[in-house]
Image (cartoon, rainbow, N blue to C red; front, top):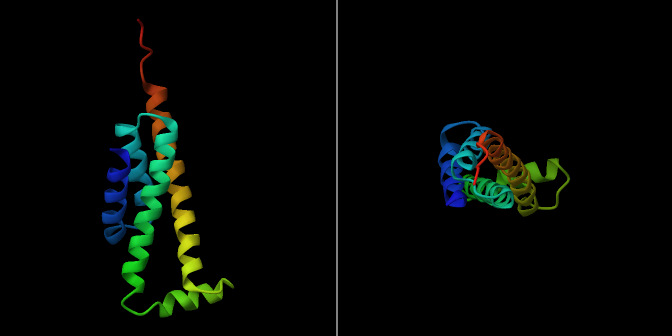
Length: 115
């Protein structure tokens, strides 16, 4: 449940808000739906990286990757595909740390269960 929520929220927020809003939404989604730390980390990583890839491709395909190729050359990368991979890695790390932080805050404020 956590992965699709993060993916959908990050994709929708990518059109309307700055990049960091996706991190806040991943934090909130993990705070509400997070079950385990590893699940929160990988859901945040995959959700934000896939959303950023989709958003980048939706903006890059109409102009036949001209701008993406130029930006890749500015960073001394051989092609726009590698730039897309670097973008996905950065987005994934930001999302994973945000979702893991949300899960840790949830765990910190949970009441100790007595049996």
